[in-house]
Length: 160
Image (cartoon, rainbow, N blue to C red; front, side, top):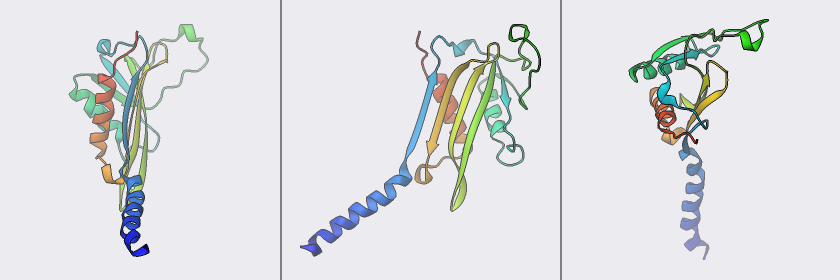
């Protein structure tokens, strides 16, 4: 009886061990009432330590530029000692873009997860957020992950 069950148990064990490596997820959500078709310009806030290592901000900048938008990038701009109602956006763009990238090692370094957030530059409220998560077996290049997230954000429908 054990000889009959051994191959079946082996297949089940192999499936369970490898299925964790084949997870992927791609999501996007636009804040109700947001109309991304009116957006013309973006300011990408460069994450500390990104310059010279992964340059994810450059990948986002390149992708948005190819889509026809005006794009600038740089550090986060601090606004100090001014009442909120007197503040005009120092970013001089329609949307502030922030991102969080997570890298892991599995034979090579690869991007496991990327989250991109669009923030309204006038009121500092979130407009949209997209996420891409690909484990080792479904991994994508950083360029492909940026494109996947941005495509999903721009294709997502806003609720009224």
